[in-house]
Image (cartoon, rainbow, N blue to C red):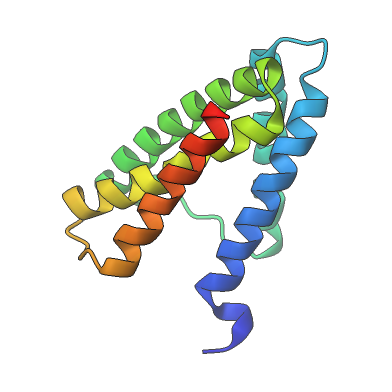
Length: 143
């Protein structure tokens, strides 16, 4: 597998852009409603994603998509929107250095959900790593 096709490259890109999201988001919510900030962010994401779809010629007719894809993508969109609303409000109220690590508890929660609902298999490294994420978030939140 070529490096540019590896899931790891995209996962590291996700981490980098999530970090920038926290920094830019904290600066962006100063003096405005966190809900308005989330709305503006959503419009920008819509425009950027539409541009990528256009450049890569990946548009598809919505009617051709399977019903289960629609269901889970709509649920994912609702969860994402609620996550962003909570995240921007937390950034408005608290320091990035505490908000971002607590937000990353989503990693540990996703591990548990994948084990329970997707039947993924637990491993010692997975459980230790997930536990360390929780421990790190607790240390940052409490101290």
